Structures are given as structure tokens and as C-alpha cells.
Length: 94
Image 1 (tube, rainbow, N blue to C red):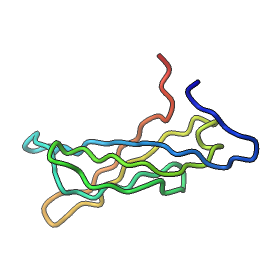
Image 2: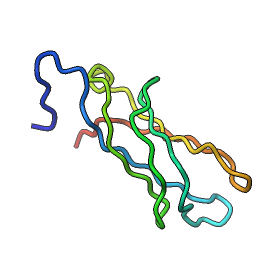
Image 3: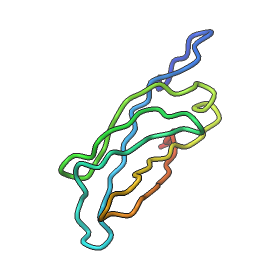
């Protein structure tokens, strides 16, 4: 079973990830704070590691998962880096 939802349960914990790459150099961007959202709900925030990957776990409304809404990873940018946004699906079917 991939997902178990109890009656009355309003949220599930999701583990989300994104990788930030400098498009000029092709190298990962470490130390960048990334916000993960599903719809209008902020699920979690994380800082990218040496490989440029940010991973975090947080609660997400069950209805968002059931409707198959994706998640958005947002980096707001810095003095030397532009902002970046990417989306991905919450459910993977193999």
C-alpha cells in the first residue's frame, strides 16, 4: 500500500526534493533556501546541500494528493543568482 488515509485524516506527510543548478556553469548551487508548496500550502522549506539538492518533509492536505496536484519548488534568488521555480507531480505511476 502506497498511501493509507484514516477516516477524518486531513493531511499526509510528504517528502519533497528539488535540485538547483547554475545554468551558466552547470554546477550545483549549495546553501540555497528552497520553498516547497502544493497549491497555496507551504509544505516545507530546505537548504540545498553540496550537490544542490534540497529535501524536506511536511504535511500536505489529503485533497491535494488525491486530486493529483503537483508541487512547486521555489528559490527566490540572491544578489548573484536569479530566482528559479520548477514543478513536479506528487504521484508516480510505474
